[in-house]
Length: 374
Image (cartoon, rainbow, N blue to C red; front, side, top):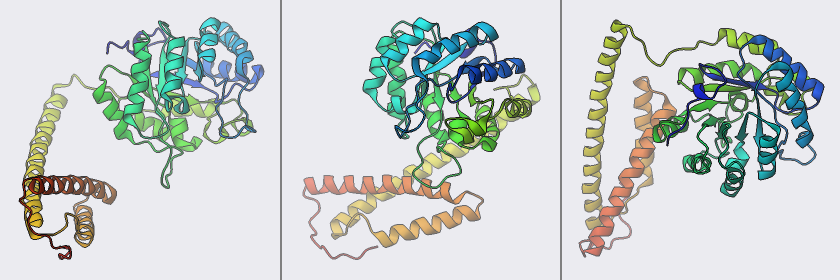
């Protein structure tokens, strides 16, 4: 994909900083927030939600089309370009006609390919940037599909927005980051800028700076921050919105690092460390390949002995002992458990494949059903 990078969008250089309230609640609220953010000199794009896809119909659902006039005033009086979330073709068309400078597709919209198709058609050939938030579920193919649909509509100023995923377990975050999915997305579409939305990811204002720093340390292309002139009285997502003073404090304390350095000493040391990692990685891969060959041999032995592929007691012992050993070596227990589960899953798959092939060839003659679990 030939995607135009954020620094060439015309909003300024460096990491793209998008800031503004979760919702446009009134013209006065919008102007007060925009004026304060303009004064900071730290914002490239002013954001505001006009159509809010809330879970409950009794919640504040935004001021809709009439708030486009408020954003036109923001743009005219502060000079800040403006960005809006769109959830339907009608929204997209209205934003283009109103001179909105950028739009984004929210997580709920991205979760529905039909909605993305319809909006992409309405935006066909648009020259404004289109941002694509990750879907609610950690589905990389769905996220990539939304980006591809927008790209297929002739749009070249595109960025993904990593805002985290609906939690399926207890977490300190409102939406679980799963940073590895954002990394994989960048690996699959190297030209795609990825911006972080630490506000939706955190869910709490005091956690936003920490999350924003994490995103910058991972070399993301920018940040989308929710800022409200009076967060305690916000009509939506009040807990995660910073006030302008908090925004300035965060921006002052964030460390903006470069992706590389021209220092010869740094480059030589980095190359040495990378070579050591490369060596270890190849050793790990070689050991895993050896393990899988043994698993296939074990599958054949089990098949000929009339023993099942999976034995619960053995698996629980593996998980327990390997996790304990990982922790004793300084590894995180959850990480070790994930790795062991993936290795075991592949081992079981290979054993099962061996058994299928042997059965097809008539090589599994044993029929014992009560073999020991070992």
